[in-house]
Amino acid sequence: MAKRVLIGGFKHETNTFSKLPTDLDAYRARALHYGEDIRAAYTGTNTEIAGFLDACARHGWEPVLSVVADATPSGLVTAQAYDEIAGCIFRTLEQQGPFDAVLLQLHGAMVAEGHDDAQADLLAGIRARVGEGTPVGVTLDLHANITPRVAELATVIVSYRTYPHVDQHETATKCADLIARTLAGEISPRVWIANGPQLDGVDHGRTTAPGPMRDILALADRLTARHGLLSASVNAGFPWADIPYVGPSVVVVADAGNNGAQTALKALQEELWRTREEITVDLVTARDAVAEAQRTGKPGQPFVIADFADNPGGGGYGDSTGLLRAMIDAGLDNAALSALYDPDSVAQCHAAGEGTEIELRLGGKCEPRLGGPVTVRGTVVSLHHKPFRLEGPMSTGVSVDLGPVAVFRAGGVDIVLASNRAQNYDRQFFRAFGIEPAERSVLAVKSAQHFRADYAPIASGISVVDEGDGITSHNFAALDYRNVRRPIWPLDEIETPAF
Image 1 (spheres, rainbow, N blue to C red):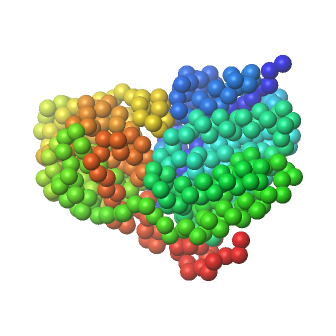
Image 2 (cartoon, rainbow, N blue to C red):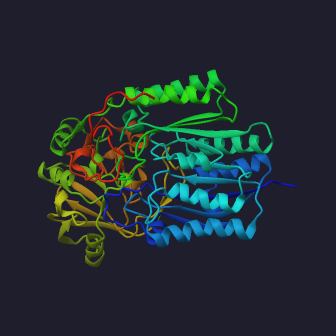
C-alpha cells in the first residue's frame, strides 16, 4: 500500500518594521492554493512544491495536498491569516489521516500576531496531530530565522544553498529523499541547530560571486563527508525582524548517534562569526548609480540599478522614490523602472486611458519620510490587468499577478506602476507590459539580489542603491530594534564568543 504523505506550504518573510499587515488578501495576491489546485499551480515549476510532487511520484507515495500559501514580504501576518492557513493544515491532518509523513514548505522568517516563533508553533500543531513517530520534512529559505524549538519538532530540515534562490526544486528533492530513507528504516535523523550573537552574516547569503557564503557551503560539504552527516544547511538569517532569535544559524541533520554532528556545528558557527563583516557588493547612492548608468548603459547592454533599501522581497514598500527622482532629474533616456507600487496612480491611469497626458504624484505614499511622492507630468503608455508566468531561473513557471498595471512615461523613463507589491527578479516584470529589457539603456528594479539570476546575463554593469533610510536598508543602526537578544553584532561591540 502506498505511503500517504501530506504536502503543504506556509511561507512568509516578515519585516516587523513594515506598517503593512499581511492578511489573507496579501496571500491571495501572490499564492493561496487549496487541495488539487496546488497541483495545477506548481507542476513543472522550479519550486519546492513541484519537488515534493515529483518525489512522491518517484517513491510511489500518495500525495495529499492541503494548502500552499505565500505572500510578498511585509509586516506581521495577521492572526486571522495565520489561523486560517495553519488551521487548514491541521484540518487536513485530522480529517484525511492517518499519514506516513509530512512534507512542508516554509520560509523560516515568519512572524505572526501572537506567534513570534510562528514556524515552531505551526510544527507543534502538526506534531500534536501526527505524534512523535511520523517524519516531518521541512524546507527553508536560507534567510530563515530558526529557533531551537523548530529543530526539536522537525525530523529533517534542508535550506536553499543559492541566493538568488534557483535551487528550490532541488532543495525539496533532497528533503523528500531523506524522508524516504527515514520511512525505509535506513536512517534515524536528528536535527541540531546553532545560533550566534549576530544580526547578519555570510554576506547576507549571496552566492553569485566568490565570498563567505560560497566558502562556508564548501566547508559544510567537507564536514558532511568527513562526519557522515545527512545534511548541513547555512542560513544567513533575515535581519529586518525584531525578534529574539533573529540572525544567521547553522543546521545539521545526522543520524541520532552521530558524534560528529556537534563538531561540524561548532566549525560552521566559528566560520559564520569569522566572516561576519565580509560583503561582496558596494552600496551606493541613487545619484551615483544613475551617473554610472548614463556613462555605460546602451541598448543591447543595459545598465541595471537595484533598489536594495526598498526591496519588496525583504518587506520594503516598493514605493520609495529616491531612485525614481534621481532618474528623472538626470534626464535619462530609454530607461525603465519596474515595479513601483502605487495603486492610486494606477487607478488614475486607467481612468484617463492610454495615450493621455496627465500629472501624477508617484509613489512615496506608504512611508512619506522615505522621500514622498514625485509629482510629474507624463503619458499613459499602456494599461494591463493580466497575470504572467516567470521565465527566468528563479521560480520558473510560477504565475505572478501585479493586479491592475499601468506603464507611465515621464520624460525618458517608462515606469511600471503596480497595484500589488512584488520584487522584480525576472525580465517578465518588463516584458509582460510591452517593455523589452534588452533594448533599454537603463533598467531599475525593486530588488536586492534575486534580480541577478535573470538580469546579470544582459547587463553591461550593475549598481546596488542603499542610502540607509529604507526598511530593508543595510543600515541596521537606523532601525528601532527592541526585542532582539543583546548583545548582538553589529548593534553591539562583542568579543569573539566561545562556541
